[in-house]
Image 1 (spheres, rainbow over the protein chains, first blue to last red):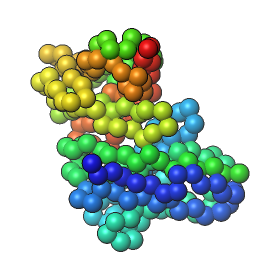
Image 2 (image 1 turned 135 degrees about the vertical axis):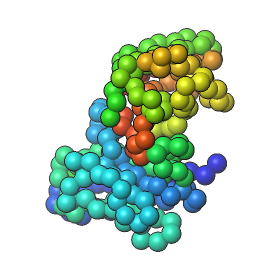
Image 3 (image 1 turned 60 degrees about the vertical axis):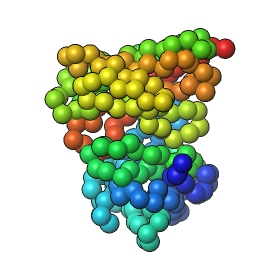
Image 4 (image 1 turned 45 degrees about the horizontal axis):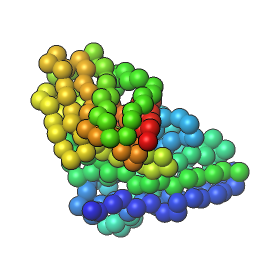
Length: 115
Length: 109
C-alpha cells in the first residue's frame, strides 16, 4: 500500500537556524498538509496546500514557516529561524479529495529538536 | 470546529470487543464523523468515517445514534496492536482535521 514518507526521521538544529522538513506524499493525491505535535500534547493543524498554493493555515503558521512543492513529488516545510518552542513531531499528510471525502494519510513524522 | 467529547482513557482485555464512545451534541447535518488513531511513535492513521448509517470496514465498525449526537467505534476483537489514542473528529465541509485529546486505549494481555 502506498505510504507518505518523511525525511529525516529526526532533525537536531540550533536555535535561529533554518530547517527544511521533507515529505513525499502519495502520488495521486492532490491535497497536502502539515501538522505538528509537541510532546504530550494534541496534534495541531499547521497548513493545507492545494493546486500549488496554501488553502488554509493556522495561527501557528506565522511568517517563520513556509511550504513548497518544488517538483511533482516533494512537499516541504521550512522554518526560517527556529525557536526552542518549535521542538515537536511534524507530520505530513496527503489525500486525494478535498473536504475530507477521502481519508488523510499521514507519514510517521520528523522529530525536530531545537537546542 | 465542532466539538466532540471522549473519555480520556479506556482499558480492554485482549481478544474482547471494545466500544469507544464519542459525544457530539452540536453536530450539524453535514458533519461527517471521522475516527483516526495514533499508535505510539507513529502518525495518525485513518480508521473509519460515516454520516448517518452504521459503517463497517476491515478495521472497525462505526455505530451512529439515530439523532447523530453520539457515535461508537467498535473494535470487534482487540489486539495488543490496537493500543493507541483514538480520535473522534467532526469534519463538516472542512478540508482539515482538528484533533482533540482522544481516548487512550490500553489493551491488557
